[in-house]
Image (cartoon, rainbow, N blue to C red; front, top):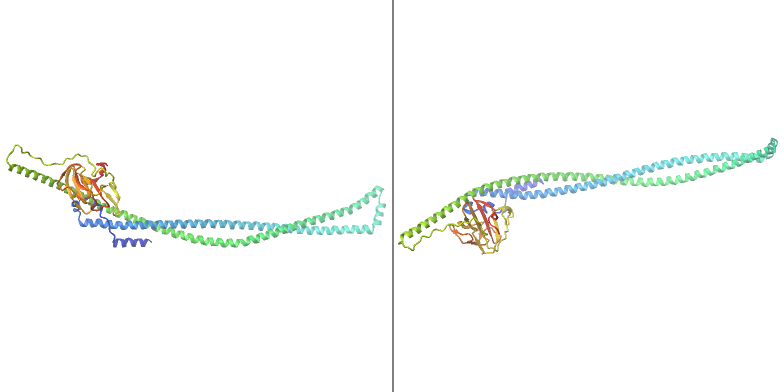
Length: 458
């Protein structure tokens, strides 16, 4: 991208086919003063303006490329952050699943331990029941087979009847105890069998759960691997976008610096020409005043000579030559119905070229052919046509102050004329570089343009 823009700059500087607006220094000064600038100087300024125009286009292009690269980087970074959050969520899901598998495995171990315990306890109870059952059967069989002998021994060995009853009760109690023990053992065995059945059911459910969890784990692992791959791709994309952003930013800064340097060079060159033309204008104004004064004196001398050649007469009087009446208070230069100012004094965007330029006066839109008036009394020092101003008039009001009226349809005064404040000097039009009927009104002090609204009011 950087090499492409640099090639664009080089090509633009080498081959220029665009048409540029007239330099602003040639728009703001009389043509006689502008002739003080050499063709080489004009060409140098024009070249600087052309180079600046190319740099301006390149600056716009560089800014657009930087903004695009910045947007691409931010979008890539956002995608990366989203993918990172998705991977973190997936990692948490896998961790939770692994934890659930561990819990299920521990539960299965517990169930297996309990089942082993109950199996062993059932075996013990079965053995004990078998043993008790054998003892019980032996007692029943002995009692049945030797009941007479046993009872006779019991009777004979008894010390008394109560002792006899006691002994018979003991035998009965022994038999009854065996029955109860057998019943208790049977009940315990049944309870153990029930617990064993319940744990077997829990074990089966736990095994099913574990199998389901183990099926989910590979799927999640595949997703995690895919997420890691996507994250790596996005990380590479973010890195590439960041490098592109940094490259375009660096190039933008370089072009901005080149533009600022070229603009400074152009400003310096224009300032030098402005100063040169200002001095030339002052010199032209001085010569115009001297010429007007010379003509006035010649006319005065001619009239004196004519008077001297005539016979004296008591009715003859000498008419003094007309001198400017300068009030020092300046009137609006157009008819009173035209008070709008369409363009103020100072920097603006040219309505013709679209480029920045310094506007050395104010523009007052007015109807075609409407009157243009002298802002104050003075001597006309310029009344001619200019390629930019069109038909224009410059009046010297003394003390280094002049006023300029441009784009006129027709000038009604000539160089050397003495005009009064409010006297019509031209008609409004759109001659020269103009986009519509208006009066371009400018005020200068010692050749330097000043804001006309400091002197006149609408």
